[in-house]
Image (tube, rainbow, N blue to C red; front, side, top):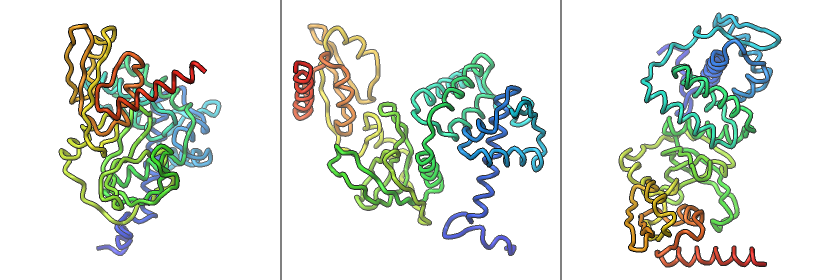
Amino acid sequence: MADGDNDEVVDGGVNPRRRAKQDRTARIVKVLTILQAHGKAGLTADQIAKRTGTAKRTAFRDILAIEEVLGFPLNNHNSRYSVAEGTFLPPLRLTLPEAASVFIAARLATRFADTYDPSLYAAFLKIQGALPKPLRKHVLPALTQYANHPTDKELNEHSGKLAQAWVEQRVVEITYAPAAYDGDHEPFRRRVHPYLLEPSMQTHSLYLIGYDEGRKAIRTFKVERILDVAITPQVFTPPNADILASSLRLAWDIISDQAAVSVDLRFIPSVAARVAETVWHHSQTHEPEPDGSLRWRATVAGTKEIRLWILGWGDEVEVLGPADLRDDIAATHARAAKRYNA
């Protein structure tokens, strides 16, 4: 082994100096990708900094590195930097159905995101160059609008660390602030094996699903409630992917660490067809009743998430079981009626 290789790995991870170089290289490539996507219109240093999650001074240094180190000449017109289209990344070949799927994914991701993440922005910029022009022209405006979302630097930093630990299969230590309705109010420390990072369509949030060493069970953590993340040198062996996927299928949305519950509902005739035409959960079954109503059943992990879906139907659905869920929904409607009649 060469002398310079001795400090490639430190405490089970990559040497911090080497990682810093890798991060800078990745950031410069990201800047090039962003500039390529914006074509002749280009971007200002402020816009580059926002889209890459860096300071304006860092953006200027990256622009200088692109020109002097990488040898990519950039145009500078009225302080807007641009690179000639087609001079950087080779095109990715997609079939038309694949391209349409990518386009829909980009629209969904930017539509439901509440804050701006430079990594998500850069990822879709790389992909959009492979789309047919009729689709490509819709992606960039959507991403430009997405870039105007407020930036939560702490959330992006935590998400990045969790993604790194997930890929490297490293144990993380997190400080977590539980929700008030969970009963606990004080933040607590946990060692977690990151098995999965999963977005929620219901809450528009990102969740960490992993093995909690303290609870000795798989638990779900909302990333927005994580106050601190530290990646440890310890590695873990993830569970079989099929087993993990099977356990997650019990979730209504994200939460899969609750006991299975059989839910039995009756929808009124006016919405029966609308309910029946959609697959809300893979376990669902339904059949029409003589009066035109719809009997709907599913088995899910706990009732916390499906409860919100049921409440969204208002008086168009009745909970037949389980009894505690029926009582909960009835009490919620009663409180609402009292508030409206006050």
